Image 1 (spheres, rainbow, N blue to C red):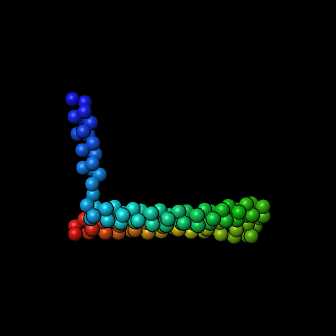
Image 2 (cartoon, rainbow, N blue to C red):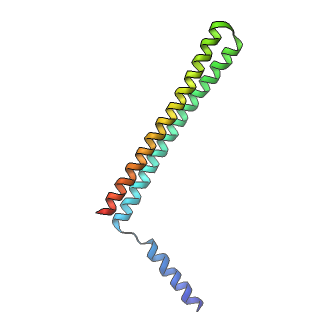
Image 3 (tube, rainbow, N blue to C red):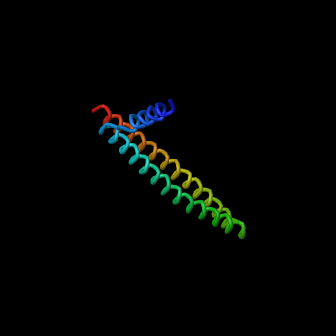
Length: 112
């Protein structure tokens, strides 16, 4: 009885692992889109981190000074932080578009 269960399980796993060429192509398209989207987000994260570091340096400089110079530095720091946030938001939107395009191409491949 136990051997029968093992054979049935092996057959089920083999059946699940078999993919049509269209399914393989769809998986490849989704994987490629996911990798591209991840790269977009990673690059934007690096750029945004640099901008945030600049903003922090400007804040430190502003804290050491006073008057109008310090205020200008503070304004530049805030602008740099906002810009970093926009870079991240833009990257998220681009990554989402790439993922959506990958899903659409995968669906088209499956529909062939």
